[in-house]
Length: 192
Length: 250
Image (tube, rainbow over all chains, first blue to last red; front, side):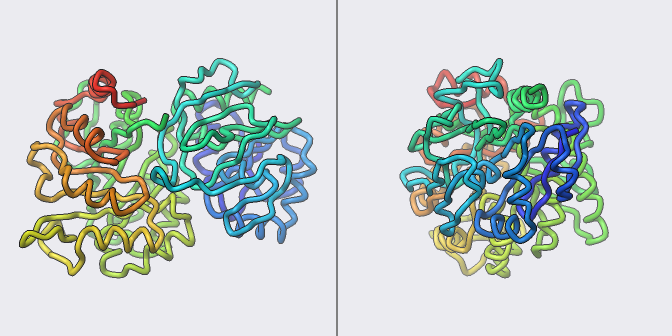
């Protein structure tokens, strides 16, 4: 069973539906006990960093997430909150990944919105995925590159399309909105 | 590389698609969910659902429809029409809409854009602008072009972005339904003044029209309805064609 963390910045429903289509049992919850004991956890998110972090701290969900030992997948804002710091309203984040999250420059339209391919896509989540495959993004801030960037995308700058460290996985794009390619990536997570 | 987006638009009334739709392999052309699935499978990059239901009671039908669409398709979709408050928008987003679009309600009360962006994030808020040339000036119109507002189009786009809109869906009323091609002029004027993604709309009639709007403007998306619904342009053919024209598409 996969627990989808419900908090004040979720698009939990879309993630839940995508897992359902893959015949994967899932529950949307903010119950720490259920989250802690689930086989896997998805930490979704659409919204703004500082209010999301404030909510996580006030509810203690931040500690729950940091203590998870099972595979965890952060999505979009979820990825950004798993980094060390976000420029979005000067927010200290969970620090699972050392990367900082920065605002895009303004040479091209922001948000980065639409389908984009990879310049690198390695690791277990990207089994069977080609760098020419497109996935769906919508975000105004990006996680800079580090050794934990196992997938990279280019939009004005090269940045972390996905991060991985130990049991923590994260994607900046929305696998739950990325058609067949996204389904494959979610399936890879389910099979970890 | 970020791809240009091809976006079919479906008009919805009382939970059903409105315009006559002629699509091979569709059993019930009036069912938005079946159409959405068909478009998703044939390579549409996003979908826009525009609810033209007049009555408030029917909003529940729309919510249920959005829930079904979200269950069935795995590409992003925008829902617009009649959203006048944060509550309206939140209900649609909770049901599974990725983005919501506002048009006349934002003209009537611009602060709505700020409220929506604060609650849902700018990436969720599409400002739909209907524009028309009135006395040699690009002006924002509402009610299908019947009412000319005080806003110059470029000024309203800038104001909308300043208030928090994350994307602009720009429909040229002078081109809508003409099949004469997208309105390159106004698309450029708006795209040169704001730094959010622009979806051009109105006038699509042939595949080269899509080449033109993507090569001659900064629009990152192009929206059309009838050419897709009536099968005049099949999305896979359009994508193949655009690739031969060196337009990056998925």
